[in-house]
Image (cartoon, rainbow, N blue to C red; front, side):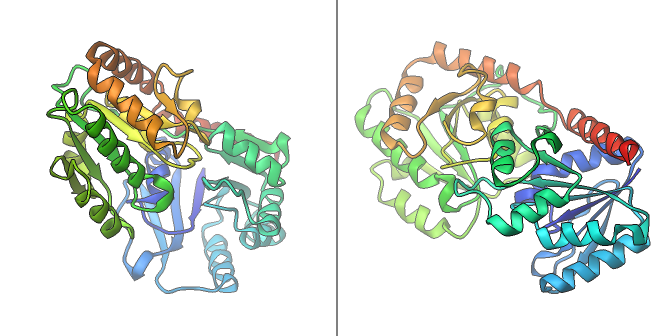
Length: 360
């Protein structure tokens, strides 16, 4: 099949692009002709992705401009499937393609809404996009429910979970007394709550927390605020900012961590949670959004109420003090994480694409 993915930003290093890049590579490896289109952030060329051809717009476009660019590209490529990946469905793009797709052979239209917002979708724009698509593929059951509530037909809504690269380490790695948080530095990711919980845990358990440190990986607009918060903590000398990690640096951070924390106020899926689990890290996570679907009933991740610093500090304190419980949680997390792979995600996409093409 010839498959065109339309992203809200054509980059694979963060956000939605990072959440789906592995599936794109696997679809290309399975013999499909993969294309990706979208505006390039800051007019930069997108990062190369194995087997995927890029079609970047290098300047900001109004909605009509994006629509014209997409139509022109579709008429040249004549894709079998156009799959839209964005936080909320771009109704004007999806409806426009539905009305005019006969001009390039009649592509099947798929949309994946990646929003993690509690507020849901802007009603009119989202409803148009969700109903104009032939199929809605949500990243979690929670996200599917939000999409149906916003107007997606339930009989045309499916769930496909993201995958994970095969990690080189598991729970048997030589762990250090490290608590790891990885996230984009924006308010809803809750890094400020992780710092506050670590500070409280250290104050409440001065002896039991001895030697433990907090490592924070990421970047974003709230970095200066978070660094200032950490500097005012009584445990400031035990809090390290690692920057945005890639490749071997990220693997090394995951390999030395004993506890991982995902303190988001809401997540549609929880890709960082899955990454921690697959690397054999015991995880404490917010009980919100799609995160509980990755907890295996509490065995693969310990859930605490979203935004509750005291509950997070208490959970950290218990695992810091109880090594057997922490190691059991890490083993359960690792076992659960092995269920997910980019190959399985790509296979699920492929099956749904094929069914759509057959039905048309």
